Structures are given as C-alpha cells and as structure tokens.
Length: 130
Image 1 (cartoon, rainbow, N blue to C red):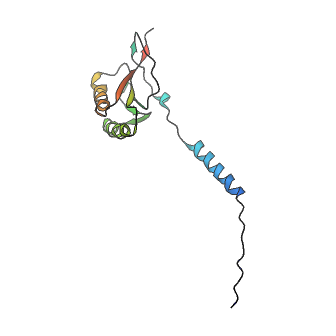
Image 2: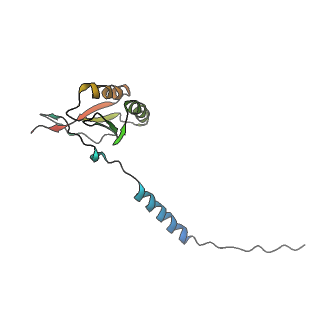
Image 3: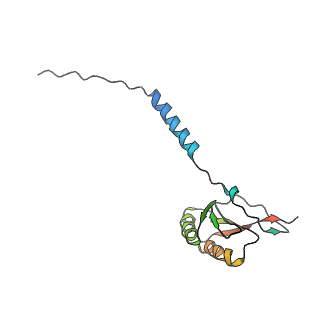
C-alpha cells in the first residue's frame, strides 16, 4: 500500500507581527486612564505643608460629599471593601486623603475610620496658606 504525500504548507509570520502591533496600539489608545484632575474640590490650607512621595491609594471627597477612590466615584461601603482588598496586595500601606475645605467632619470622619481599619497610614493633603 502506497502512502499519499502530505502537502507542506508555509505560513508567513510577517503579517502576524503587524496584527499584534495593531492590537497593542488599539488597546493602549482605548484605555481610559484615571483623571483625578476632574474632581472639583478646594483643599484645606495650613501654614506648613510637607511634600509627600506618590501614594498608592488616593481618596478625595468633594464639596458635595461624594467620595472618590483613585478618581472614580464610590460609596463608603464600596470604599471600605475595596481598600481592604487593595491593602492586602500593597507592600507600603499608605493613602492620601484630600477633602474639600467646606466638608464637615461628619462626612470625612467615616472615611478616615475606614482607611485606618484597613491598616493604612493616612496623609491629609492640602494647600499651603498664602
């Protein structure tokens, strides 16, 4: 019995590289980066302000009392559960809290408690008085 000859098919890999490059470019261009600059708040002022290194977690509270975690709006419950998970994965447990100067302690107090329960070192952010 004779064997049939198998046809050898060659595939060009050049176009595969082009497709991979285009896919990477597409995903980079379509990514929505966190834009904390869009949150409207007027930070509190103090006579002396010390520059801090970049913090892994940033929490903001705007004038209306809306809480933002890394630039995205969230509720207090969402904040607590998310920071508990994030604090487990982070080696340096530190967070920056920026609160609008008009926000009362009743609003930002529970946020401070949530951050401290997660074991985070809290740095309050503000502006230097002029």
